[in-house]
Length: 316
Image (cartoon, rainbow, N blue to C red; front, top):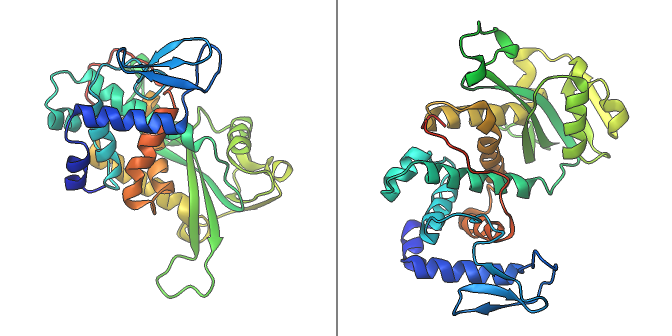
């Protein structure tokens, strides 16, 4: 949705509230007390009431806005800004644009939106021909480990380990300059270590068992032949990585560039939320202006896992 269209459709708090209620009714309101899906709107109380047990819930209850006191229009503006561009917005910049005094609620709002992006993508598994590898993202040193001597390489306390998976298919009669493979959907999952058992569990949850997976010859991938339809493993020369696993490494490089351009630093405990946003938008890169409405739709259907916490730094 273009900026002038957004202003025309949602000029004030009332228009945003009405749109949110309209979409929530369309998506279906579920009673958390008895599970009934038949509700009616009590205009005098500004809430839904269950037709079965009479339980009442607010318009925000059990949605992305659950427990929030921020205006509906703040949420709509945040969703618009996150979906109107391939890039993203930091909480500091959004706070400045909104003119809000406190940083904390704006920061939480963005993380809640990123949380439901991840929950939506968790519903789907990747299938077909799959590229898989690990990426290492620079993060801030955890507070509990500050003062320690930092390790070098992939085991560094400043490197977040991420399992990166991409649907990939060969391009027939690729023209000069074209990539040898085309990409479908991707997943990026933060992992605590590179042990085979850890990677196996995440891969099984993210990939259809009938898929064909191609990886490097890392020992962490040795069990894949028993978990998936086919496993192609090979030693990859660094200069050939763009031919064998092109989209995994394009995704890693683009995400790193995006984070470096937008944030002063990313705390390791919040890395998954930022990856959620990147993957959600990548997987819907052809949705165009409909992306805002899709995010608004899942905002009425999903309650975020992200919980309130005290956070004073603006680094993330």
